[in-house]
Length: 218
Image (cartoon, rainbow, N blue to C red; front, side):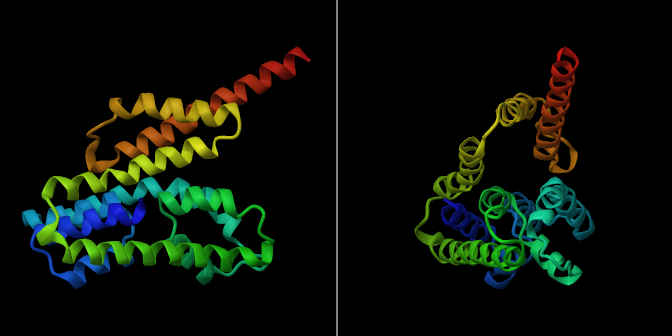
């Protein structure tokens, strides 16, 4: 599904008239599909570069809570800043969900290498998808290219449901889903950030409240 989504991105970039190398560089160095769509769309529309850089940067803010929650799992016995920065670069939605599931059983000393391997593998798949989509654009219908981009949020939702283990996980998913249409169209493309952080915060506060009530009853 990740490769299919990036096939759609490659076709979109080609259709907007972007060159192959800048399109490929966006996958390697940005590696977050919503931010990449903002980037290529802005370049295609002739948006001023400072404004475009700000929009892409604000879109990336949604990944900050993911980085904060995942970094303790990617850190080895001897923390090294340069290695942690490389690991942090690979944190995107798919990496976050899969690393939360796969890293805990890995021995602590092997987690940085495992995280780098997982992130590099996912990135290479995205590079392959971008390349295929870019050169298939002539035979890829426009609606199909756009539809393929929707596979990323669909796969993310499936992974969240699959990894939900406790009632608070389900409550966080439900709260984020309810908030999503309320914050749609937020300035800077931060709708996913606000729905995710908001839903997670509501679930956390609800969990803390229930724990205190149970503690008081006992």
